Image 1: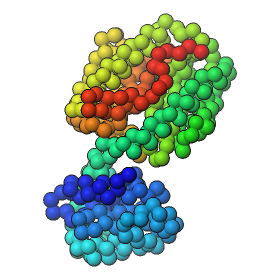
Image 2: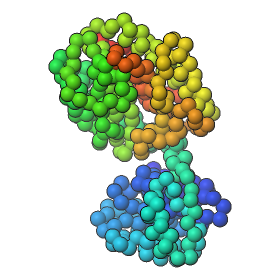
Image 3: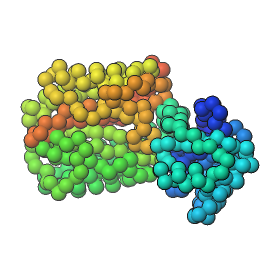
Length: 356
């Protein structure tokens, strides 16, 4: 990972007059420095960059952040350490991440950073993270490989009487067996009527013959996430479920076909909603998709209101669904990489309706 180049790219995007950027969001700190611990901040500027953490991470940061000045502070000493380094670097205007810094922290810093003006910024690092480097895509592919392998494994382990919680745990264990470093999020397993809830929390509801099974899950590898949803039938699929699955499959393919460089996110979302509406169903009431990377939900967002434009190198989900109260629901989700001539779907798992 080229952390120095990433920091240079951030410096080039600083608002006019801002000398440096205070980065406090941990995924952003990791992106810019390589640090993987649970507490750190960084100042990135043309006159120099500094990494800050507490005593728990002195040794870890020594090998993870070898190319920056590192400052270890006591629990009460962050603002003093920050003020000292800003003074030595000649920083008088310091940008900060408005969506990452709490109001309390902002007030504390404002009162303690004498002679330094704090300037609010939004999404400067996040927008850099939209475009994935080859190494980042490779990490997402490794995560997806574990996700695909786990899905294939659990198909032979689904049985009558198994609860949603048991299946969710079985799937999570399978991802670890397949090489995952961690889980992208808590697995969603929804049976029958519960599949009508887009983000259902697994319960003790037991599996019955004729149920739809909606599974939303993902592995993590090297800090990078993936996200996949499949809906399968336990036993012979009812005609209505099969029809819904066919429509969602068609809608998802339309969305994948529309993902390309320069595509406006809301237009891709609208195209997919129209496929579902034209088939006589109520479209999903969530966004069509979202970026994935160091966070499970990041930009760009494929939503009904997003004016964002897809760049080459973005990795986003395409996940339409149809949800019918009392019957259940179907969602099919895949992670795709935006390529110069369109996009590439990362999963190998079939999107066709599986009947167990």
